[in-house]
Length: 122
Image (cartoon, rainbow, N blue to C red; front, side):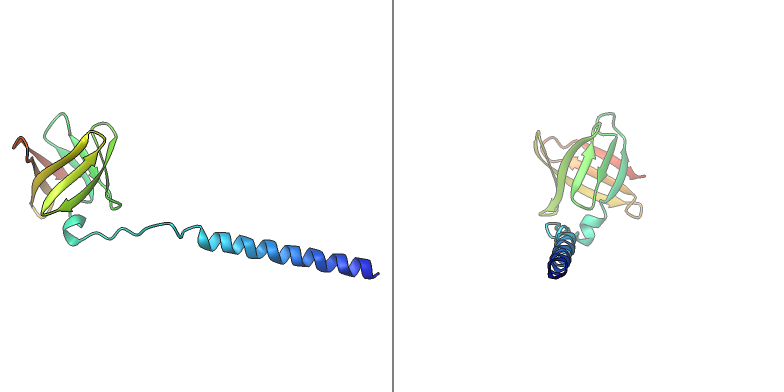
């Protein structure tokens, strides 16, 4: 009889250990997530924009500072020294920008060439 009681206690301890481990894993699984806080200026960019060009006719800025353009190429974006900086595999590109029409129109100008594109919020 003592053998069965001992064995039952052993299984209860194993069950408690497993439940505790599952709770710990569940609680700790999201600890590596970093919260990206955007400034009010950066929040103006978030969304999908339709352009007036055939090369970059759609660009999407995401709240996690990722962006997508030109047939699903991806990059990272940020505002630095009042400039839009897009870092892609091809390099880092800096643009002047301005908003109009209640923040529904975005004009970006590539600093190196002076070429501008107009985008409208989708």
